[in-house]
Length: 309
Image (cartoon, rainbow, N blue to C red; front, side, top):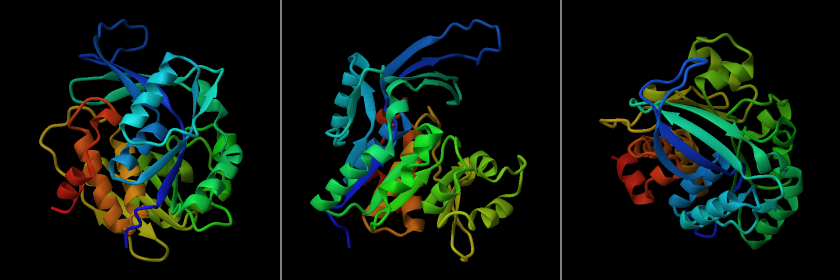
């Protein structure tokens, strides 16, 4: 049964994204003229928190921004998405930035400066999460791989001695800390990240990756782009989640974060992992229909209508 008081806590990064569009990605040493695009909220933590809030779930983001105009912009946009920003720390370091090039097919190249995000420490957030649990249930803690490796290794502290479940999108793969991987439920990766976690050769069959991953995390989701996703839980047979078809892809930026944030929200709402991933796939597909990251995310009604069709 859905608990309207349940909260998802997101520990992660907050950036301001600047977009440009190029006809072709430049080669090393080449200068390319671009068309200016939008500037707005980004960072994997912020994006996934926004996607989670779009599902109608109480969402608290634990992050850091600079004491600068970009930090003010990020906070304002997070609140517009319905995210609780009360626990975001203001830092002397500048707000993280991402510079994103898109080509006409919707593919992208992203360059990130971490700034204040390097100070985001789950060990320091532990007491905050305990306080939030005293206010109501926190079934899900959601995290990503773009904290520093040392801080990522601290993430299990946010769920220890509790009923909370750690949903870990280890993107990028900055650490393979075994305790972190063992705490993930699920561990969410794309195919390249799955191979990197296992130190497997590129092109290793998905069946082999899943069979090895099931032994290092409580459950695993491997996203496969246009082929959907695969889920493995314990000793059960892998389950395939089909991709959700859309006629035209405008921009893939943030689609993976839409998948993860929606997945976490659906689990908090009481959905099982298969149904949560199905809704995540719908959210990711809808996010490709507009430019930008969090600004492209759909509402819960739109996601459920497509995901349950």
